[in-house]
Length: 437
Image (cartoon, rainbow, N blue to C red; front, side, top):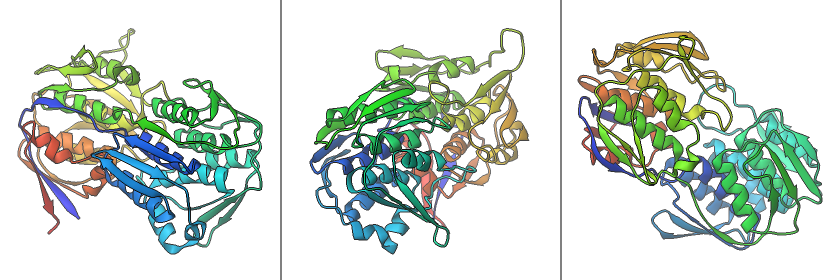
């Protein structure tokens, strides 16, 4: 297990380009199973979760060809259905949560799918009911084996229907959409997720021959088709990386330009950073963050403390709340961070408190942060990355801290951020990757 050794206190300067979107990549790669024809995908990030999914697809029988850095061709002509019941499949699929989205395409094309209990971040309960209820409404039968925590989903024929999702789950919506595109009849999904990455999936499926309307809204109408063809697709830049870099620039008082951010797909993210007092300029499709010594958190119009909360799109993505929290530790003013969607994502704040941050953890979902306004620097310490987003938040804290910090379990960070140490070191950071002693 590797560690990061981080020398804090260095300001960064230069340009950085965000990787392709992790969350979009997981959906798009699963969708390649919907056709026998060739699907080419560009801007694929070389991160652990995505590479593991590509390896899993290859083991299932998908022909995978790397065309260039970040560009791959997939051809799922001959899938080994027997392999899906093997121990090797269960072991690989259980490593990453995104593997649950293999079920929809497998069900649509082959009438069967298998899913062990998926892995991923340990951020509280992350139920899969939305996925399975959606499959059941389409006519599938689910057999859950509690002995080995493996689910089998089967159907003779999927039939379109109306469904109102109990939550606007992104992966749940993606999974149901991928199942419904080849169902008989019309499927209407209300309270559907409408994140840019889900929009990207729907547009790609339409290019493959699907008939999906209502894209970018929470009401999707899908007319089933008999088969889908090949296509070419380019992933959006990762909005979570963009937000992480904005927060990093503010915490380290650095001057950064973030290139090719697809600004129109960032939603409320830039406005929320502006409410934290962070100045930036949109320059075409780039974001320029000037060096600033101080940033002040706004109050609400009635004078009450600012609250930053996550919400389904177009609300603020929960994946950035960890970054907002750590950025607030050096702001002028106070903010309440309200993590509504996951119950254990704020438990990393004890590491920040050890570093000298002023944080009150009110309950598993809320934390109040009183900023230092850069009057006091955080102290270096030894800490462990509990999940992808908290790991990057701790890395940002360490880069702004006084002294040398050690971050353990950086495999969590590698799951979502490609070569983050190399890319930040090119801007002036001092991050060393070390094998665990």
